[in-house]
Image (cartoon, rainbow, N blue to C red; front, side, top):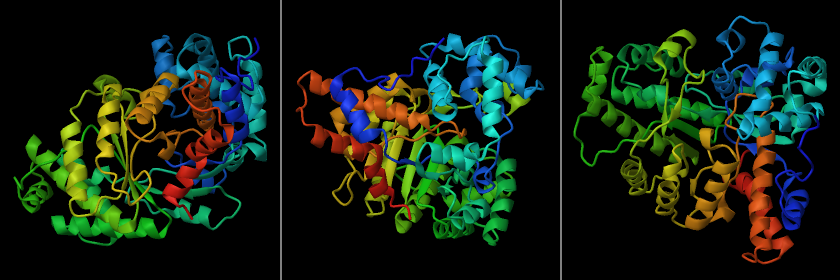
Length: 467
């Protein structure tokens, strides 16, 4: 069966088609948030087969396979790579209306020239063809990135990381520009005292600072911020259920740190206070460097405790939480803004009911110093699909300025995920084109085309200013 991914896929009118083909399609990609492994980029890894590059670590696919009744042996278990792929092929035709159906066929066409619906009937042939192509230099990690016109990307990295692979990449002009992102959530994960103290030892080693007090902790973190900045980092990232904010100094944070250091458990409110104060301290460090801070808020993680124990985290057992977000987000942003230390900020919600909450909140803290200084971020994770993207675009349009939006990202662990930028571009062009067809926007291709180009590329280029 031939695929449905035509040149005008998702483009429902002539104006949308013009916008996409003339202004969006060929622009480079700035993927400012993902979870790719920098070592694989530095070493220009060649994957042995499509399972390794496509199914390994992809919890979207794993969730679908489990829902379809596939045994874990063929998902994360002991089955061969080929067996796992064949089982995935059984599931694909039945993922209709799930974004996986679109992503799968966009990716097969973009990277391998395969314009067919993946199914058990053609799975063996596709496995062999893709595996053969993956042995060619055109399909190494850097080859795959260049194939999709990726200009630069940002990985997600812990403060203790040596950044050795980023440094190696920066020395090699043949590699796609790869920048680290500072992800320090473990530095305030005081709810698990044993794990936290183990992490402090690693942070001590990385920073060469003995951490015996809260002041030492901040010094060690600032040391790592400096190091990351020297090696090209321009963004931080936090993945949290919710922010916390306290109007008063209810606790002495130095004393809380001392308790944790002495392996004493903190009360839940003490944990929240520690996180709140440390986030504000980090925010001031980011402002000092001119970084952009990213806040990913709203996931409830590791829900299936039995399978978490068997398979570990990040294996497909996270979902959308229903946390209260507005008041603490306001308090956090205001705490930094009140001292003129609020850096550029992008806020992402996972619960779609928070769309208007987040989109209106960020507008409170744009102060005219930077275009789009505080942004309502792209549709994230479970919202990273056609309906979710349309809702995010429409909410941003209604409550802010879509024209300032820094656009799409992959948030992915897969080197085959970059057609998601094309997916977003098609959806964006279709929305604007439909408005023109409906008489809601002027029929001005040059003007609207420039806005499309800005959202797809130039806004991000100017906002992040990667070197």
